[in-house]
Image (tube, rainbow over the protein chains, first blue to last red):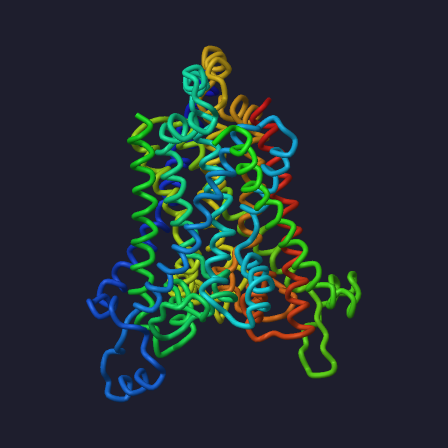
Length: 287
Length: 285
């Protein structure tokens, strides 16, 4: 009897240790990836890395022949990302918030249930398919790759994320808040704009931050829509580059592999900062 | 602005969702039609040829469907022994402690890393390790891709499972403790049976993520258009063949790639729907 109890206790301890070890091992890849990107990327960063566009094939060859450091940077990608992302946000944020409001107010209604399912469907759609579809919708009729097409692809990817976060934040607000507003004689629009949305601001805002961090690193949907471009460009109906597209380009071009880690470090820092910031803000606003 | 206009504005904004979803399906179906008509629907699914010689073009989706299923299955297999301990660590053993918070932040950050950076890490760090262990000569292949894929889906499976493990009622667990059960026995006899369907559904959703993952797989799978004959061989997944060849494709090849996209879309949609429905049931019960 005694030995059986002992056996059970030992087994319990063994499982606990096993779980602790395996859970700790899960954290290893994060630090391995961060470490690799930081160590390799840090040396590649310089001021010109952020102000100059990617070098042309000619300039690269010249630098290699002279044994110099590959000139240039990722400015074209940064500007492209900013442009594409801003266009996507301008459309996705208002529509996403409106859809979220609709879903939170009509959760019982059948139409809203269908919309809710479709939002899940959209959220689960692989990014490469969003790329194909945007290509069929926009690139083919416009007869060319463009920044607009890229931003539409990112818009489709952002929309379900913003809808879900808005809906969930509005749903957990106490109903008494809305009722109090309505009892004071405000109509639904006023109550939404002056009471519910301000109260839900934290959740909606962090949801938007997370949506940005999720789409900013997307490569596949931009490959068939924005395509890429090796100089700085501001026009929205021409092919344009983006930071993840540049990383993909560097990965495929043996001469430009020196720049791969700098670009990755920039992207990773941006994404992780947004992630940490949204987590911090969420915790702060929840108190 | 009165309530009526407000409701109409909300309704119109909401219509964007069915328009996009319908548009995706419509665009994929109309552009995939050519390939299905030329090769026949079932022949396209079961053919393993992928030849683009002019005049005798032959495209079949089987190698890529198998490649996707194999990488996803392996990724799930590698993911379970890590995501389940993380879920138990966060949801049961160290529930609501600082260390659990730290671990869930770490997994959240893992989920935030862009897939192209996972691909780089797999290519420059994991691939040499696989090569030096003599597992495969070229380093890239199904195994390498699914290992990195497993790391990518651990956060999704772990955070959702942890949520269900946390929801197991305390009085159930306490009554087992009062009978003298150890923590492990409580987990085995109480937590898993109660939270089981929720945990299972979190893995279904993780599969949904792994199926469509593009860049990581494209960078690591080796990109050969054959049916993978072992887990170390190279291959292609549905997403990676599209990413690789879509740019230079036209006519029949383009249509075939879009047809593969349609198949991928349908498979992920079905898996995601099953997962979401299961989660709803798990939350209610």
